[in-house]
Length: 367
Image 1: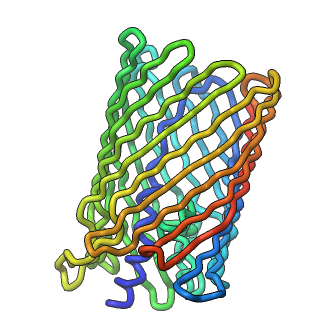
Image 2 (image 1 turned 30 degrees about the vertical axis):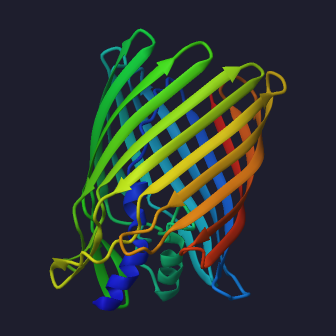
């Protein structure tokens, strides 16, 4: 069991972060979107000259159908090609479907969704090793598995406008499904259910939009073969976004601070309080967009992410990214965006250094 606890502590934390989908905006047509990314990162540990190299190509495809004026259906499928220190994790991921309903002059939103497994959850030894490295939060890779169990989610929110201010609140619940983590030996894994609550406000003028929100997320313990093995930490996150528009220039800056409460691994049916995988986290992003004409714009990009040390003074990291991008619009809705970033960073109190790059291609088509 101790071997499994060590592996689980490395990578299973990533599942909960990606399971909760963002609230989708209302649509009255059919749209297709993708945000494909190739990302590679080198980690130099200690005095080693040869790096640990990780890379991932992710190709998501999202389709939205407007069933009626107040009802839309989302479908999302993703394929990934990943490599971590010579080990591979490649294939399609689970398919997600969600119905989004709007009521009361669009002041009330409800959505219900499912994650449908495609029998890619179980991992062999090579895939398990790659998954553990990709899930390490210092690397910031988006995907670390191919699938999980059959999940069901329900979310809702309300919003009301008071002059230039819009106030909103919402909540959600995800019922997680069990899946086969490995086949040899066979291990059944059941992630803990999740609950979340959010409050926020938007303040808008002709040239400035400011958005602030706060979110709380809580998780039940995860189980391996019926035994509790991991407790995802409760999270409190505060976020602020500001968009300044003064043609032909747009500036967007955002920041998020995430507080992680106690988390850890279970051993002999008791929580090991000495285990805390990661500390609190700071994320910041900015872009400066220049409108060259009605259809083409250029961007300067920057982002920063810092994970503080846990209570055992371990697992800290900092990652800086900077680059440029270009957007071409066919009309007011459809567009093509190409972005490139270079990354540098450190981890483990400076004992590990990192560098790499990413290329993102986004396409949005609508009619």
